[in-house]
Length: 106
Ligand SMILES: [Zn+2]
Image 1 (cartoon, rainbow, N blue to C red):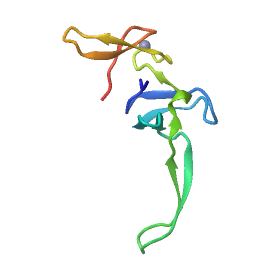
Image 2 (image 1 turned 180 degrees about the vertical axis):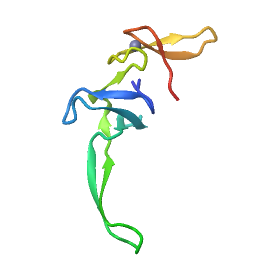
Image 3 (image 1 turned 120 degrees about the vertical axis):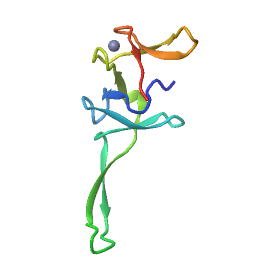
């Protein structure tokens, strides 16, 4: 189940990048992978294609598995499990299990 969406703040809890915190840039629901800002950077060598363009090494994030991260609640700043709450109008929302606050992000 994907309980992490784009622009969430997550903390890496296992793997090589344990302890890093970053913003979710992209989610791949089919493979359960996400791209987290500045986490799992891979180096790509680029060639200079024109006079103005600089060749060199480009760092780019590679996806990591969603099971390696925990959502950080924007309200209580704790790593939190999320539950589902239902608003009065029937809209489903994510709720932090630590502080019971709604976690809404675009
Ligand atoms: Zn919370």
